[in-house]
Length: 146
Image 1 (cartoon, one colour):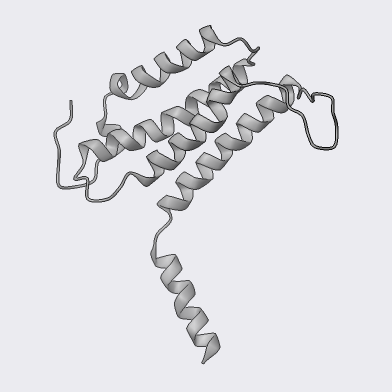
Image 2 (spheres, one colour; image 1 turned 180 degrees about the horizontal axis):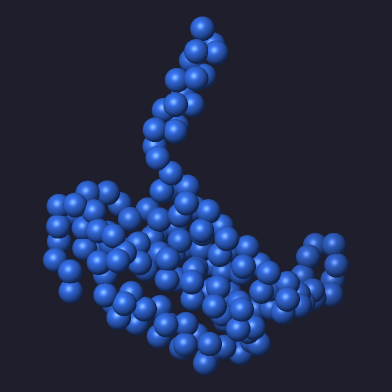
């Protein structure tokens, strides 16, 4: 267990057991109880989509807690919306135009989960970008206006 520190905690300081245990157990439980067929690729994306916010939360919990764990909250919301639907969601839907149910293929569902995973990665990268880039853009915009 990591004690709280006044500095930020990096992921390398968290034990692999703490990092992997809960996401792997949750994904395994969902995979064994799902009524839907799930491709291994989509299941791996769902696991990674849970692993990223969980690791971010563990770093926040072990750190100084001076800010909200924003990435953990948003990434967790992505996981709830896409990964839970992958395992337990209803795979058919109707639209206002057609009266028959539309059932997407397993490849389309896997592609959707992959796109959500890429979205979480891009969110993580965007939150790690230096904040001085936004200040630089504001400074350049004020020069153009003058």
